[in-house]
Amino acid sequence: MGTQETYPIDVGAIREDFPILDRMVGGDIETPGEGEGDTQPLVYLDNAATSHTPEPVVDSIADYYRGYNSNVHRGIHHLSQEASVAYEAAHDRVAEFIGASGREEVVFTKNTTEAMNLVAYAWGLAELGPGDTVVLTEMEHHASLVTWQQIAKRTGADIEFIRVDDEGRLDMDHAAALIDDSTEMVSVVHVSNVLGTITPAAELAEMAHAHDAYIFVDGAQSAPTRPVDVEAIDADFFAFSGHKMLGPTGIGVLYGKEHLLEAMDPYLYGGEMIRSVTYEDSTWEDLPWKFEAGTPVIAQGIALHAAIDYLDDIGMQNVRAHEDHLAEYAYNRLAGFDDVEVYGPPGDERGGLVAFNLAGVHAHDLSSILNDHGVAIRAGDHCTQPLHDKLGVPASTRASFYIYNTREEIDALVDAVDDARQLFA
Amino acid sequence: MGMGSDMYRQQILDHYKNPRNKGKMSDPDFSHSGENPSCGDTITVNVSLEDDGETIEYVSFTGDGCAISQASASMLSERLPGTTLPELEAMDTDDITEMLGVDISPMRIKCAVLARQVTQDGAAMHQGEAIDRTTTEG
Image (cartoon, rainbow over all chains, first blue to last red; front, top):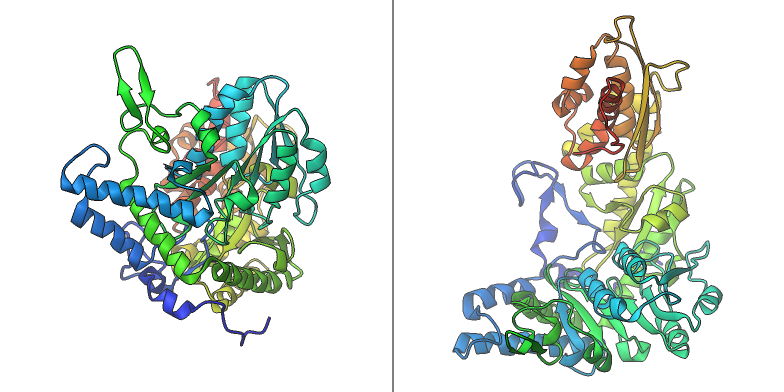
C-alpha cells in the first residue's frame, strides 16, 4: 500500500474534533492534563482499550447536565420528561445502529462485561445444568471466559473451547465437532482483541441454532469498527461498550432477541425495573427497563446516541475501510522485521489492531520505551491470559487504531520500536 | 523525554544484559520464589548467611521477566551481602528506587520491588513466620 494513498475518510477534519490528540505527554503524571513537563506529542494507538471522545459527544454530556439533567421515568415534571424522551431515543438509536427491531431488544448496562454477566446469570443459572455445554473460543476475553467458567462451576455445565489455528483463525471444523446437541450456548468474540481475528459469527450462529443452542456475540471490538447487523448474524445476544466507540465510559449495550429477554428473569432488582410492588411480591416493567434497575446511565446513554450519530456520519463501511487500511499498513511494517513477531492472521484479514513482541525486549519494557516517545499502546495479556499461554508469551504489545489515526503515527510506532531495539541490543 | 526513559539508564540495562550473581546456590540457608503476575516476572532468590545466622553472606538469583525486575534482582544481590536480616526486613520501596537510581513509573513499581519482597518473604519464613505469598504487592 503506497504512502501516497489517501485515506478512506477525512482524517484531518476528524482530528479537529479530538483536541486531546494535540496534547503533549511525558511529564508529571500526578496532575491530570497537559502540563509544563509534557514535551512529547501524543501518538495514541490504544483504541482497543478505549477510544477518545469527539467534541459533539462531550457537548451532548454537557448539554444534558447544563440543560435537562433529571431522573428518568419517575417525574411528571418537564425536565424529567425531556430526559426520559432523550434516554429512550438513545435505545432506539442503538437498535437502528445494530439492526435490532426496537428498543425492547436494547438494554443499557455498565459495559460489555456486565452485559455478559447479565446473560450468564439471568439465562445461564436458570438454564444450564450437568450434561450441558457452553462453547467458547480459545481467544475469548476474560469478560466471557471467566464469566462462563464461574457459571459452569455453579451449574455443573461444561465449557469447551474452539481451537484457534497457528495463523490465528478459528478452526471451523473443530467448531462443527464441538457444537452438538449438548450445547446450550455458543459465546464467541466477534473480533479478537489480541489476534485481530474476525470470527465468522453468522456461520457459528447457524451451527448453534441447528442444535437448538443460543449464540452470544461479544462485539466489544466489532461494533466500534465495522457495520454490525445482529439480525443478519442471527445473534441471540450481542454486547458492546460505548467507550470504545467515541462514547463515554460507564455504558454498555446488551442486545437480546425480544422473546429471549422476555423469558429471562431480571438480573438486578430495585427501582425503575418494577411495575407493581406489594410487601409480598413484585411484577416487572416492560423491556428493556426490566433489566435496568435503579437510576440508569442517562447521560452516558444520551452521549452514546451522539457517538453513534458521529460514526454514522462517517459511515461504518468507511470506518471499517480506514481500520483495514491502517491494520494492513501496521502489519506489513511490523512483520517486515525478523525480530518482530506479530500475532494473528495476515494484514488483509484482521480488525484494526496488531499485537506483537520484539525479540529480547519484554512487552512492558517496550511499552515504557514507546511511552518515552509519546506512543500510547497497551502491553500485557489484554485480558486473555489463556490465549497468551497458548502463544507461549507472558505478554504482548498491542497497537490499535481508530478513525483519527494516520500512517505517520504507525511510522512513529515503528521508529520507537527501533529505538528499543537499539537500547537493548 | 519523560520519566520512562530514565528507567532505562545504562546501569539498569547493564544489569539486565549482564546480571550479577545469577544462578543457583548449592547449599543456601533459604530460597524463595515469587512472581509478578501482571508482567509475568519470576524471581527465585537464594541466600546464605554468615555464622551468626543473621548477616547475609551471599545472594544469588534466577528468574525471567522485564528489565526492571531482573536488573533490580541483580543489583539487590550485590547490595545485600553484609546486611542483617532485620535490616533487610526494614527495606522499603524507596530503598529500591534509590538503589536503582532512577524514577520508576507507578505502573512498574511491582517489577522493581519483586526481588526485595521475595527476599524479605524468604527471610521471614526462614525465621519461622508463616508466609505463603508468592506475588508482589504494590
